[in-house]
Length: 181
Image (cartoon, rainbow, N blue to C red; front, side, top):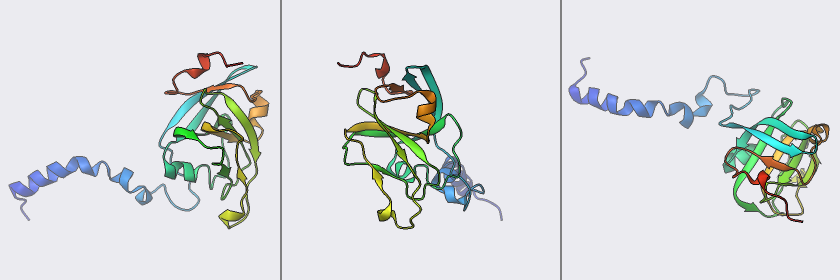
């Protein structure tokens, strides 16, 4: 079959759209499927300004509702000095919490306030129930603008505590400000 000029031009016009297919159809990737951890869209360096000095981590970022909903589900392990940073466009009510449905590893979660300071740290254990409604929800007592999940015990091992400041690219550098007394 000989391609006409119109068919060639149409093919050339659609060529840039073809580069988007892996992003549009991630399930078609050969690296997807049962037992394969999802590929991360973005990782960023996070620094926790703790009493023992800066504690550096490399974390995945969950910015969208689907990313935040998936979180660290279905993971069998999480590397040391890694985790997931949940970012929100506006402060979240203390009624909004986190659960461990389909999460296989114990985690610590730090709720981060508007100033970039850790308001609270909680330990979360995996929920073995196949029913999401039976999994406990971990809620902070105060509103938060971000949350950081790491391996259980990691915050304690790094000397991280409530009141420490957390910074990441694009956060506005709030850790340089003196906390209000």
